[in-house]
Image (cartoon, rainbow, N blue to C red; front, side):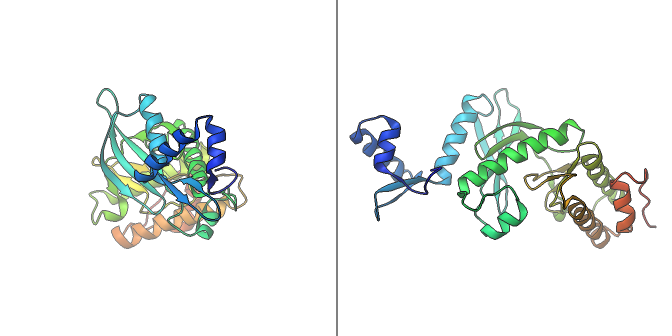
Length: 273
């Protein structure tokens, strides 16, 4: 599939090194399980779908000893599904399946500059997972409040459990100013210590934990601070959070003051009365 969308059956036989009748039996079985798609014109060919790609990734992470059972779905987004899972020994983890292709190709290219114009959705999803895992490792190492990144395979990232609810779902917070300061402190640490800008931060990818701590999720669109648009992305992230807290919780700060704080130009974040 690196060379064409649908792989001719003859090529599959040649690559597999198995008898043609065995290949026919296997492809028919995979088709009945809806793990691959088939075309008959202009040639007989097959392609892997997301269900088949899921099976390959799950097989790998199970063999690696990362998970032994899946629980309920934690969240569904435009470009990913996240599941609760159980690791050997009883620890809970989160398993994120990247599924690019739910939004338009133009939107995907706009948000993710590494995507090639000719790359298939499965390949793009693998690149997104690889990038998110590496970014999460970097920011986690620098003390940013993210789920602990555990491993990555194909389009899947295994991470520490995500408990709590998206910020957008909270109508009231017991200490909204404290939560706001925690979020801004994490943006600052991401920028100054890790040299990263989230790039798509909003109330949709900030998790408020039961103890009112925060987790920042969804990192595949992050950029380095030397990216030509890093300052623009940072300002957009900050402005979204400032606007949301002002409207929802009456926590107010001038966006310019918030930007100075997260960029390290000031050491304190003064909130309006």
